[in-house]
Image 1 (cartoon, rainbow, N blue to C red):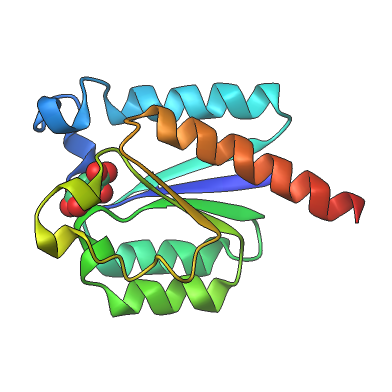
Image 2: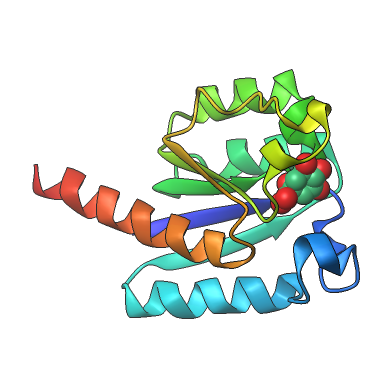
Length: 148
Ligand code: DQA
């Protein structure tokens, strides 16, 4: 079983970027934790960050036959990218959208997610922990599917 985690623009600066909103944990810390939890769950976790819309789309295309599911935090592209939405539909894998902050409690332009209706579920406002819950939920989902 494999789950791929995609982080969008500016998330490489986690730890120093607006810590009141996004917390003090670095992206390397979050990714390392997910890989460790994955090991406990017998699930390979691969992580990828890019500041470029096309690179995120290319990553989805390149991994679509290698992975079972995605955790997606497209950051600013959540609210703008029709192309990323189309790619998520195209790869047709169970996906969970994660946001560190509660986007609904922020500026109006962050209330709209172009992924909201094409992902399995969404977790936001729980900080870095949200990624772990997403991983646990996807592993449970994939296991249930395999048993059926
Ligand atoms: C974010 C929320 C987005 O609105 C913002 O553009 C980000 C981070 C989050 O994780 O809270 O860069 O995706």
